[in-house]
Image 1 (cartoon, rainbow, N blue to C red):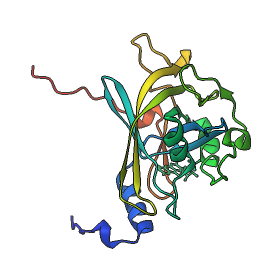
Image 2 (image 1 turned 90 degrees about the vertical axis):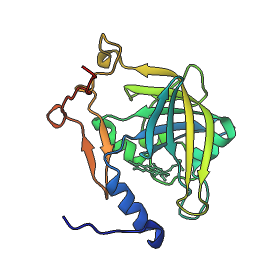
Image 3 (image 1 turned 90 degrees about the horizontal axis):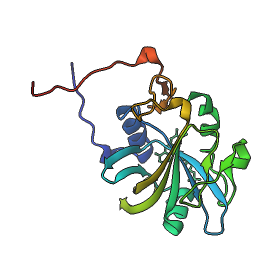
Image 4 (image 1 turned 60 degrees about the vertical axis):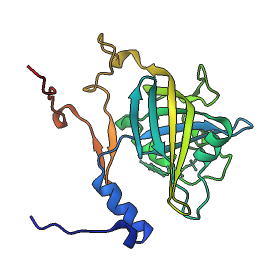
Length: 209
Ligand SMILES: Cc1cc2nc3c(=O)[nH]c(=O)nc-3n(C[C@H](O)[C@H](O)[C@H](O)COP(=O)(O)O)c2cc1C
């Protein structure tokens, strides 16, 4: 196998982004609902997303600066309110999830634009997506910017205060049935993956015996 060495700092940002998302794949998608300070709701997908720890339960996603260097609505709202909800979109919500990535004007409500229902949260102001079978109410822990200007990262670290899980997906063990959840993930270019049972395999971790 011949290996090519590529230095991302030497690539235009658009090419660096395309290379990065084609290497770090598949990625789960945080479908993030937030509120403006005066209560308008916002919803957008973020696939620079992962869980971080469980004591307390924390998550992180990166909201990059927009191509003109300005902060995206999600970042503005979290900076102003310190609250957000991470919803998970199964395959059947993929199209609507994608539609919410359109760059609407600040204050335009994606729930209304794409026809989704707001369900009130218990501990934070942003609503969850009623159609989504998994949602996590989060309070902001910290925002860590890395870089400046267009496409620079802003790592938004949140503490999960509360999970909302559809009963039909909850196993007696207290976990989500991954065979039934119909998760999707984002990959390179415009590729996505659908976690069908045929695509999965089970592997136990090694033990000390
Ligand atoms: C599947 C998917 C994943 C995305 N992931 C990210 C991401 O991780 N970070 C990011 O800044 N933008 C990401 N985007 C683009 C944002 O969703 C898009 O810029 C959106 O308009 C931001 O909305 P907002 O300004 O309401 O926050 C993604 C888009 C899609 C469709």
